[in-house]
Length: 160
Image 1 (cartoon, rainbow, N blue to C red):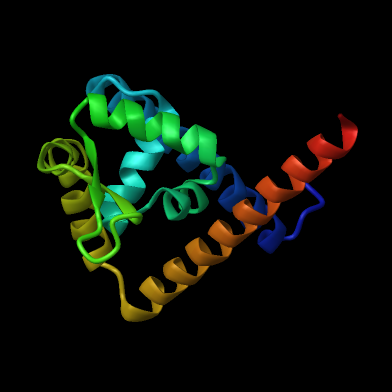
Image 2: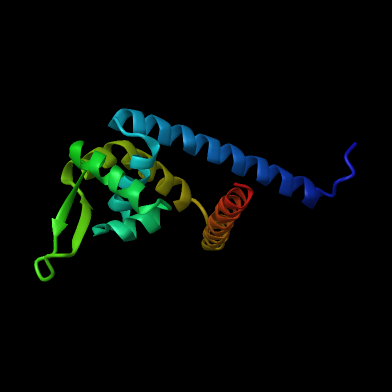
């Protein structure tokens, strides 16, 4: 018999469910990267571009959590695969943005469209209060993950 309270048991069950969800998301990303002929870093960059639209390489680096050099390499590979292109600004020729191509958007819709549709159907069954709770939990979880990624990077740099 466990000495945990019902709430403690529920918290542990939610934490296990989060870990399982992360693992299943990882499997989807791996399958998508393989289908698109990309590595996971390139897939992450492509996802940012498809969701956020055109941005500078520096903005993409920040959004994807990559160094400028790694971002340049990823954009080069995405451009060779016809998933991204560099576009010079009409007003400032020194400024270049990176944007997902129509081919990238089409392939993305093939892969993630069904997931989005099914997710929408499942979320639509929830009450407004449940949706707010889910949203808040996911936003808190995202922030926690970003903070922990930074902690891990900082600790790794300190031990080198």
